[in-house]
Image (cartoon, rainbow, N blue to C red):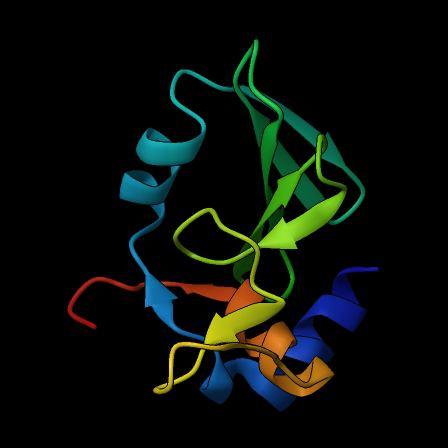
Length: 110
């Protein structure tokens, strides 16, 4: 399992934004419980429907909403759609959506 995350990250990480992990946890999962299952670590705050999922092998993380049953963008919102310059809503391609819902763990000095 860890190997798959490592391979995924090697292939796509250039498309993923680097995010400061501790600040992200403080915003979306403050005072979390931490659970590790195979190659993933899950951070969840009691009473919240949000889970921050870390792929240990790939050194990236994602934000999941249990209530909405979907991965969210870095702002905690649905990443499937966006607002165009004309003010209308449009859908992202699957590749664009994946880039909006995967976040590299920012390294010191990055």
